[in-house]
Amino acid sequence: MQEKTLSSHYGEYYEKTAVFPQQLDEKEVNFFASLAPSQSADILDLGCAEGRLATLLAGAGHRVSVADVAPSQLRHAENHAAKAGVRLEGAYPCNIEQGIEAFAGRRFDVVFFMDVVEHLKNPVAGLENLRALLKDDGVLILNTPNACTPHRFLWHMLKRGPAMDYFNPDKLADFHFQTYDYLTLEKTLNFVGFRIAELVPTRITLPRLLASRLLARCFPLLSDTLLIKCRKAAPIDLDAHIAHWRKDMPMHSPEK
Image 1 (cartoon, rainbow, N blue to C red):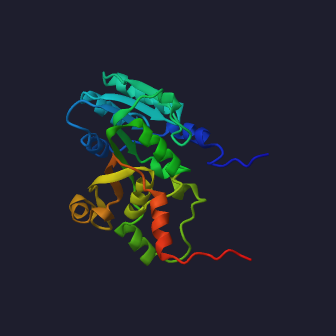
Image 2 (image 1 turned 60 degrees about the vertical axis):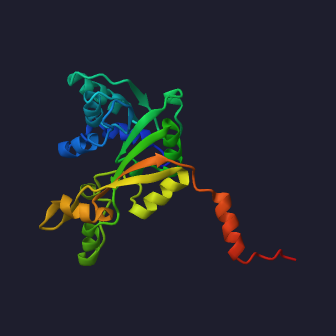
Image 3 (image 1 turned 90 degrees about the vertical axis):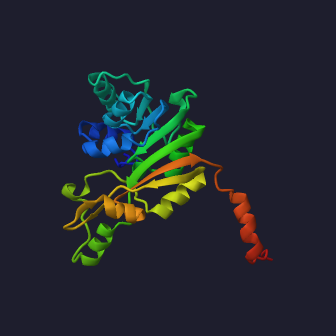
């Protein structure tokens, strides 16, 4: 009998967690919505949760579709939009790592990918599929927790005793497979065909200081989350890189 894990029962676990509200920070959701274009655009909220961001975007006059791996979240999003008196263009059940057939060739001006990439088992496959959903001049807006923050450094410097016990349900509180610092995220995006156009400061949390947006504006790479806008580009040319390495590296001699 196969062991039941997050990887083997991915959709099932995210469907179960759909009962928990995820977009609880109203100021943050409003801030995300402010990043949309000023003119009406075709927007996809990929990993829409309960649809608060999608509803704000639709209310601002955009043509908004939602997608999520959990069908319950799509229903929550549609209900939330309906209560606000706005209409969503479409609701797509989608595991972005497995393909985009559900979209039937639709492409978008903007894809919001907020706090999703850290949940992916295979982020390269997921981002490659996401890229195919964007128009050639489209924009990806992505947010993810930052692994390189003053708060984390202080924790590691001052922590005494055993490390965090993630087997304790009180300590986990998420299904994050991985976290990123800026350079790791940028490289991953470049491999699949994105260039970062803008890094948007969020906030920096320090003990006794709470959350400071001023510090984040001064040191955006240390923000609690990495909020970036990306443009489509050609992926890194791996053949050209290998050819470049070959010029400077000794080759292995064939074994006799």
